[in-house]
Amino acid sequence: MDERKLKKLLLDFHGPGGRYSYFPSQHDWAENFESPEAKASWNSKVQANIVRTPSSPLKIDLYIHIPFCEQLCTFCGCNIAVTKDHQVERPYIDLLLRELDYDLERLGPLTLNSLYLGGGTPNFLSAENVDYLLSGIFSRAMPTPDFYGSVELDPRRPASEFLHALAKHNIKRFFVGIQDLDNQTMTNVNRPQNLLVLEKAIHDITKIENHFLSGDLIYGLPLQTQDQLVSGINQLSALPFHAMSFYPLAQAFWQKQHQVAFGQISANSPETMIQLFLRGDAALKENNFQALGFGHYFREQHPDAKVLLENRGSRNVSGFSPVLTPNLLGLGVGAISTFPNLYWQNQRILEQYKRQIGGNVGYPERAHLRSDIDCFFGNLFERIVCQKIIPQPLIEEASAKYTPAERFVHHELLAQLLENKILTADDNNIQVSELGIYFLKSICQAFDPYFLGRQN
Ligand code: SF4
Image (tube, rainbow, N blue to C red; front, side, top):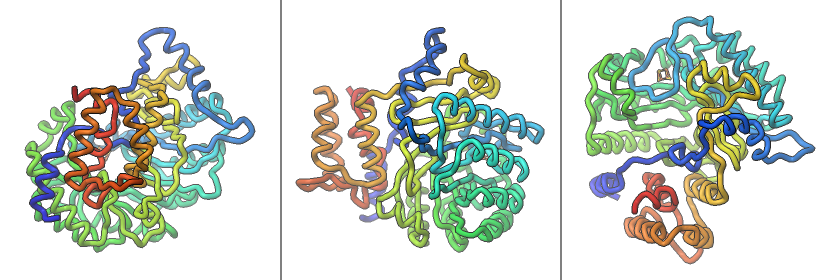
């Protein structure tokens, strides 16, 4: 498809919405903890709604949130605590381990299919402290034989010893925060960073045997130009990355205050954002990255990438991975846990998080008990995003679950997607086309009963 047509389609389908890495999104979570009864019954609700086989440990994926950053990047939308005081490390790690103990009491024995250290800045921790954390985790929950571990890294922080501490625990998938290579653009968002620093971090990572290396880029940063973005992608592509994430700048309303305070900010129009996206997307493809959807790009050479590009992978809040369980346990301030019947998000303020994990009176920030309909559509979205194909009987089953008004909107949206060849259909399946990879959010919305209900 030529670029003009694609640009028009992206503009036509442009609009707000989530990333469908879990369903329903927090906007539609129904549990609250206003009443004393809701607070008191939380623990038993967890025990009653997490399904396990009594004779064997529950296999889970573990997410651990390290909120600390030494400096605030003014574009950041993560749950962070800015501090240069590294005395905070041990007490926080002890809280994480206490939370895991608390979960082991409620859930029984666990084994780890995977572990993801996210932030904030996981490499804010010293090598010694990350080793202490991981030793504590693995002494409580054993890894499975196929275990794999992932970590987000800030390339500006010294890496070598930290990386070896991770590799010792089989954590070898590295997600490096780059954002942009232009010095002025990065300084303006309070994150001075340059290619030399990045190359040093990557040099250290590539010494780790069997590593997987991914970079995070942002488009739409103030001062960023199309040419500069493309030039950055071309320079980065000469480095041994297996994957790239390419996300739009998010401008949550609460961020604007500090964005104005620290640097120049210019709100981009949807046209400018789409133009930046198209240039960046084309540059990534020219450098052998293939799009998987929702801003994720992979190079085929790595075995993990091959699984994902053949539409055989899975996805959760931490992104795409070759194999995930349905059980994601999140540890740490603000971390999200997604189990088939129950979702919750830990308290997002550190002091409240401490109270949450302090014992039986603790309760999370918010939660959602999933209905059969939530589970059905959650599985449908996983199929759309990961397998890129929906069998016709499932589409009929979905249609039967809508109210007449929702079904009317669903049919209209589906017709638009088919007409624009974002989806293709035959007697047996509806399939996401190559073009459809750019429109996964719109495809999911066309099936999402909460979204459809709000269109009337
Ligand atoms: S280092 Fe990462 S998490 Fe921390 S403020 Fe910057 S972008 Fe946000």
